[in-house]
Image (cartoon, rainbow, N blue to C red; front, side):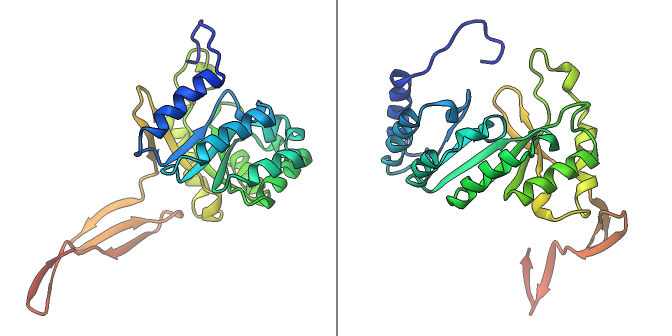
Length: 245
């Protein structure tokens, strides 16, 4: 709905329709509360939603997508933490863009959430002139790890109206991933994805580490550019029996 001129309001009436759909759709095994931003709801409204969802037997876990711990960390109060604790398994994705957002206040908010047993992941949009270089991204992901936030997604900027000045070529994102992989902990390397236009879902992108084949060997290029062989047999005779692997 980004860029839509019509005003859309959500409240209990619309939420009840969504809850009815989820109740009637057993294939739905996890539910994401997303934006706007669910943590800008009142405690009462947020708990109403979480409690309704938790009662649906086939919903296995809940997720919250938010930027509030970054831009309004004082919202992560002890009272809010007491509410969230009641609805495990509950996961949270937090939107970070730059190391400057890793403030003491944000660190305190993330500590409260992590101490409440909520697994935290970060979602970062690749933005031209803001975080589109290896060193900035490395500083960001290292800071997130120290705050117990797992760098999860690095998003290619969506082709939405008004975003052209922030968009980078895909090659820039691949360059950043290549500059992280092998040079830091695997936990600190996010998945670089394009959220495919038209509802195609998230498509992961990786630098090309496969250099080719030599007979049964797969030739792999590591982060330093060195080539290694891996025995990748497409078939093998074992004890006189022909097996396919």
